[in-house]
Length: 216
Ligand code: AMP
Picture 1 (tube, helix red, strand yellow):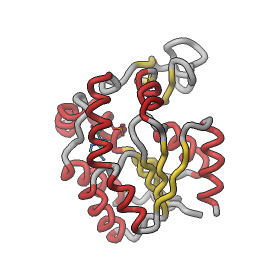
Picture 2: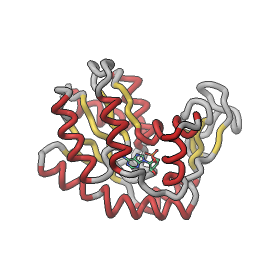
Picture 3: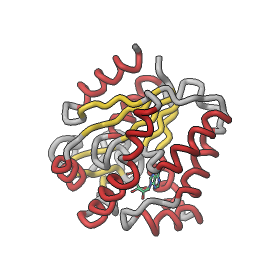
Picture 4: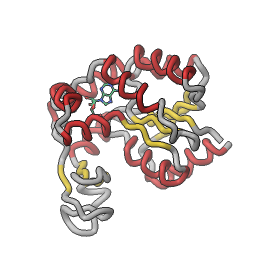
């Protein structure tokens, strides 16, 4: 069973939705740098204020800050069932730092899962995306509607649109993806860790395909 996993893909490819399903199924620790930043923003910490100045414009938070929070998270002792890195690494320096950290904590990366998705579909997914303000559960106005309009099925919290899910910030995020994150595919292909999956299929079908792969 592969258990220390990196989940990659452009914004809107379905990383968050898939991550939640994999975490529920296998008990991996879910390490989402985006969620960690949003949590810090909600709490109004120094990290949150700093992150907000980048995130709201669709820009990447500087490497040293992002690497620092991942280093701290990977030093915790709740990782024996494995971990799922979601949204990290996003740059080559982050991937290089992760290699060092993974060695330090003796938890080598077993697999990098890349979600493929075409750009038109990404824009459709992101512009209709809604998330629960309280628990972060993902929804979509057409394809993943809550039972009651505007209310989270999981916790009853209010649904909202992320501040960075607007067209302008999305363009910047896609640009960063192409320039900074896409080169990581070659980085991990060279290390024979990369496997790509088409994320246009139904999310449960995708979960099945990836589960089979992880359990191989
Ligand atoms: P996400 O929820 O993964 O889409 O992340 C939301 C935002 O948080 C991104 O658009 C970035 O501004 C920031 N962020 C998340 N992860 C990283 C990372 N690994 N490096 C830099 N910025 C990040």
